[in-house]
Image (cartoon, rainbow, N blue to C red):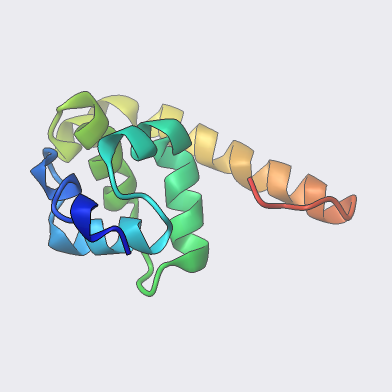
Length: 105
């Protein structure tokens, strides 16, 4: 655990201690790391690796944290785009799995 990085994510709009703990579980400790992995990819990893099952609101909150917007605004304005991107990740994982390729995106 990166104790030096604890508390950095909860300073972002829309992310609280529970969100931070989940993100830490998948190796995301800073805004920069979240930007690097991207909200959709982080959400996919959370679905697979986090001790809780994140809702789509968590996806919207991560995008909102990166864009300094409230998650509800993200849900209204970017929901379609995010759901399409999420579906694209799932389709790609299925293709890679079918081909026997490493599916770690």
